[in-house]
Image (tube, rainbow, N blue to C red):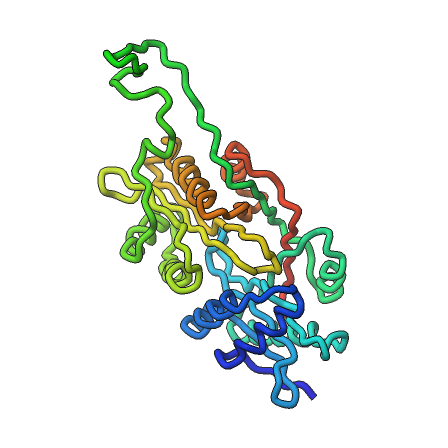
Length: 325
């Protein structure tokens, strides 16, 4: 006799207790932040709770994405499923929770549901297969957070100053790091209008709603601000929206995700994108974040080439998708 509803803040202790039993370690802080943001921005989340006899028996979280990874489609991303209480496992609650998410998606007119799995997780692979998921035309690429290799270009004419320091033409050291050639700083709340304006130049669409949601996520949920902006002559030349995850998709190790990267059209090929990524990797390494990943579609040839040059390689994770009738 199960009843279904959306999650609420009062569910925190039961959600945390079920999760702790499953993964073997407490993640109360992660779920507290997730519930806080879900309550503050209900349009950005779809949740489902299965209850019986006044107790929580299972739960699922999905995040509504409208623009992440360069997509022009609104999708729901199921990043927490299978939070089923020990005494309720094996009773089909996982499938019931998935159905509950899909019903709530229909009310929001969202027809695409996605998730990620490790290719070696045969139990989850089987579950998603029998519930109608298929491989998406999307690849996850990843790399560790070691520094980007610097490209030292040959200088035809050099000189030595009185202190025996080698300089190239104009007096600039030939080994200047790429991230030192443009001002890179942390993304701030007041950058929203400039980011929306720049994205409109790149995408041809007004995605202000998407970026307002991303800024709220950055300020309320992440706890650690790692998104960056590149400035030239006081103007925004590029940006990289990234976040640090502490539990999505069952990952217990610290990993960061690039949601969006954009470079002003006039700065294409000037190294702004590489400088943003180089500084992000340095910051993540200092925070002891182990890896960085993002998603790319097969059609994003230029982005794929850029990421490959920066050391990204195919991940062992798969993106699955399902169309909801």
